[in-house]
Length: 458
Image (cartoon, rainbow, N blue to C red; front, side, top):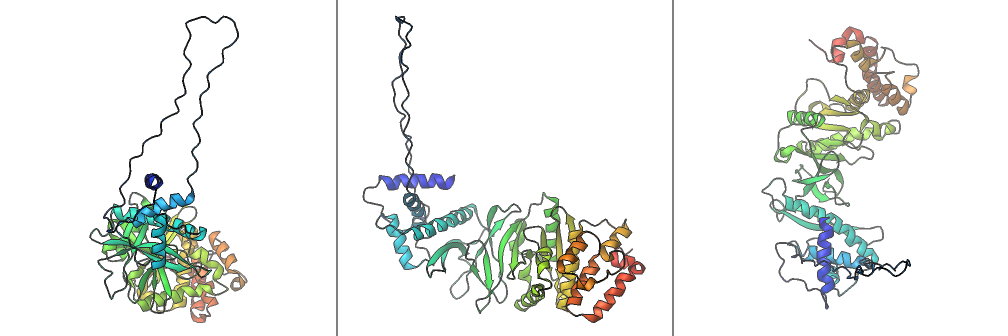
């Protein structure tokens, strides 16, 4: 509604000008002033007056008809875009850094009514303005941290036809100094996917930042120009039990940083196809540790395991992974199943143990994902059901190692096998013979170690 009003106001200025608009020489600190719209007068159709003389006959008198107001003609697309683009040209950020001189001049000529872009360029202006309006509104509402110095820039991406299209994005002038790489802002979303603000993107050792081609995420890339992870921000709602639990685990397993104030947390996506889960606290890792983490996750690209990726690394907010540098006595991973449909939960990755053996770690991740599929734990008051979640009925099915990944996941979800069966199957695919033999014995003799296996120690 705000954009429609702004466009309507600016459009009235454009339509009232005979020779086009002139670009201000000095950029104002606020967008262009709005004009006052005067409502159109209604059509003055005379109303019939009642007669004091009785009708001479029963013949009905003709009824005066209302004159219909004319339907307003639709505003041509180019006029709507010109009005909206005026707000960009008249903003404090113009001329826009990152926009090519040719495009800048073309947009100014368009706003002044001196030139008309082709349809392809109008499409690009339209897409640019949609992102600009949202970013500009978030800056005006205030960013995190409050003492940052946000500004808007543009980056031009090459299209498949060799042309370029511009994308706006927000940077922090205070930390994007000459000789240093840019420091961008993350767009913050709530659980429902609504934009709620901007937070400064964390710095990660050995990686630089740039905006993604859709203008929605910050990509982190190395000196070779390869992006490893991309990020946005996540606003947690502490009035939700699930979100409050998630925040508690995040805060317990990592040191607080300024980016994590106000229940806002950076959320990362790994650059591996079909690994769609959000990862948290990757900024606590070194560059080499990020490479080690990715090499572990890339094991799921193997043909025999690839169909498991969407199950182990569910998209959206259903399954979320937390990286922690806090020590754990033995675990590489641990899960907190939260139930729900689809199944939801949190998986913690303990990096002190994460990089000892990437095959064992990949199996541990699959093990913990199984607990998410199983739903909320019955607790230690029901040891038999809790044990079945770990080792099933204590046997290994015939032809188990010849199952497909789809058969394995289905059996785990229906309770035919336990989480240790899933670990066993994954380790066997990586030819980890020694640990496979040990785990087979563990499944068959699980009842002798029930407290240890169920983590229900006295």
